[in-house]
Length: 247
Image 1 (tube, rainbow, N blue to C red):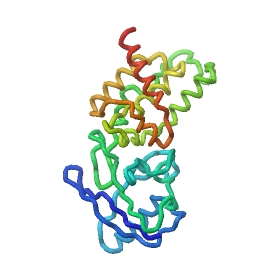
Image 2 (cartoon, helix red, strand yellow):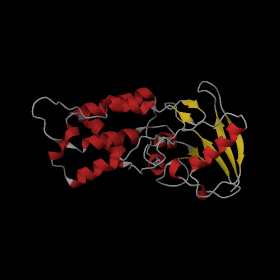
Image 3 (spheres, rainbow, N blue to C red):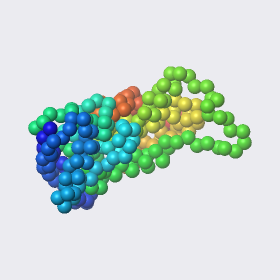
Image 4 (tube, rainbow, N blue to C red):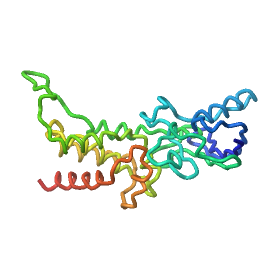
C-alpha cells in the first residue's frame, strides 16, 4: 500500500507544532501501525532527518504506551484495540492518515507524539493502593472469601491499563473513567474497603489538582477505551465520593 501520513511534529513541549506530510510506499497489510512507523523512521534516519518520536513498550496491547490519535480516534478506528494491535490492513492504499498525540492540558507534549502522562501516576499514588500492616498475624489475602459477582467487577475495573485514551477522547479531557476504574477495583474487595473513603477523596482531589476536566456523560471515554472499561465506573466513583462526604 502507498499512504500519505500527516504527522504532528513538535520539537519541544514549550514550542508550537505543525502537521508534516510523509508519503510512504510498499506498506504491508500485515504490519502493525507501529511497525509502519518504524519503517518510516528508518527511512528518515537514512536521509539524515529527525525520526518521529512516539511512545511504545510491550507492543502486545497490555501496557498502553502506544497512545496515538489516528484520524481523530484515540488508538485508531478499531474498537477495543490499542495502537500496537492496529494493523495496516484496516486502511486502503491511497489513504491519508492523520497521526497526532493525545491531547489534554494534563498531558503536556514532550516531543512529537510523546506526551507526559505522569499525572495518572500521581493520582494512583494519592490513593490507588491498599496499605498492609505486616506486624502480627496478618491474614493471607487469598484466604478471604469474595463473592463471584464482586470479584468479576473488580477484575473488570482492574483491566484499565491507564493509557489515557479516555482523556484524549473526552471533550473536557476528563480522567473520571480512569479514576473510577481504580476506585472500583479496590472498593469491590474487602481489603480495599478499609481505606475506601480516604482513597476516593484523595484520588479525586489529585485528579482536580492535575487539571483534568469534568465528566458530562457523553460516553466518548468508554467508546474509545481499548479495554472497554464500563461507564458504570464513573457512576460508582460519584457514589463513593458522595458517601465519603455524608457518612
